[in-house]
Image (cartoon, rainbow, N blue to C red; front, top):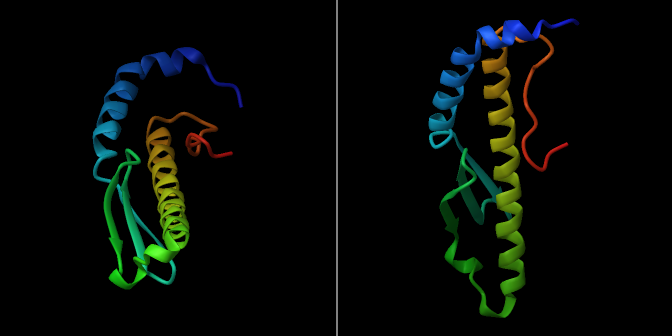
Length: 112
């Protein structure tokens, strides 16, 4: 599909406004990941900041810290995948609203 670069330049201000709005929205996008059948829950926002971490008290065993670490990492990974999907969906919708052909979403850092 041929795309005229001048068409994109015409929309530069609109693109900038939408990107600014999207960056502000990142703080409101939330996803919760869990591991260990819900024993660990970790909530991320779209800025990849941990906003909540919940552990069941029985999980905190000084003799098995490694298991707790593994569960926290698994919960983070689960939440990260959900955030990745939400951001890619939001970016794809934004690109579509700008009429830029051939763009259905944007890759998220560290994701193929």
